[in-house]
Image (cartoon, rainbow, N blue to C red; front, side, top):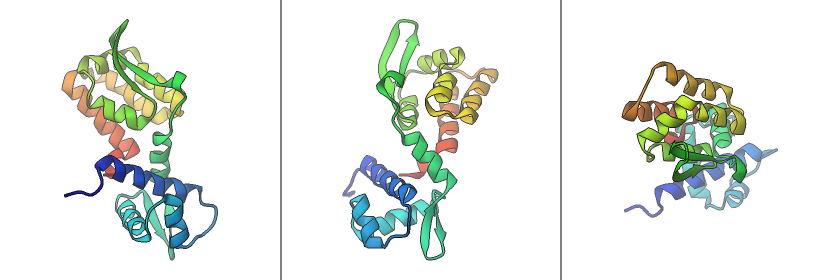
Length: 174
């Protein structure tokens, strides 16, 4: 039986990454654990898991966040409400789903109708949102290249999910 849900576990690991990224000097474990709102033992467990996933690395007697970890934090940042991505299946046909983070985008990509993914990919909506809201030219280009492969349906969904996981490492948190 799990004590904490998967979402809570992900949120805790993101908080460990965020505090580690914002730390400007070395600190002892107790202070760091207090800052992330966990016990020292919970904090150590999360840091060890983050090391295994490549989001954190051992530096001498301490730890530091990696570029992968920074990329994941960037993807977890929330855009202003007027910049959220609203999924549609066609013009004037909203699905009711919207994303304010790349994590939201990743999760919703798993759930929205494949027709919505096709609609947005082939109009260039995904790449434009990624480029504008997150300033991630590399991922925007990767999504644009999916059009050339003429992917549709579940194959398109799988490729978007795979590309998002590879770029941002969301699957490494749980």
